Image 1 (cartoon, rainbow, N blue to C red):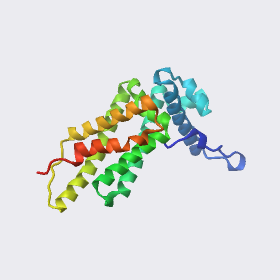
Image 2: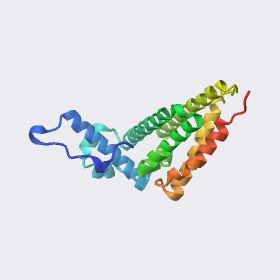
Image 3: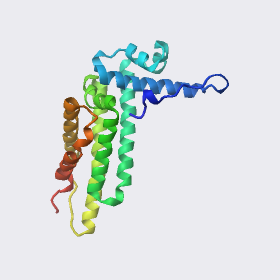
Image 4: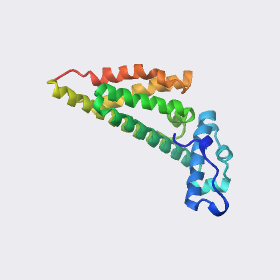
Length: 222
């Protein structure tokens, strides 16, 4: 997640006081980070609004000016973290675009693991606690998996293009194959977080690239 409580600076006061918009954004950012931290530490079911406002340093009234309830705050924190992570992965894929399909896959997967490892509270929220947050959270999760599947499809199309230029032709798998690959990666990453924590997730890189290669990058030529 891109918002960290320990990096938020105190807002200016007096003549240089921050605008209302800056204050609003700072409050919201602190609450989103606080929600991710609290859920990562205690689990979604055990977290109360009181946990969020205590960590964020805001009043209960301020909380309800931003969110209707705990669920709304959780979903906003989930969405913010996902958008930050997907953007980071897109950047990594773009930077490796000229290095070949396997390098692209490796770069995107490495950035995914690094982002989660750097944000262990969000990693647990994103991978585990979202399952306990109700139907709306599960809908968000399904939509995110679909977006990850599309990222994998982009990498595979790059592989097809490279193969075509060398004389080989490869068919593109159906959408269900990309979703299955996302599911396999998600299962391995979640298991690692539950057993060993998020900080060591980058150690999974070679294994996850093997999964992507086997399912997507080594499809039989047509």
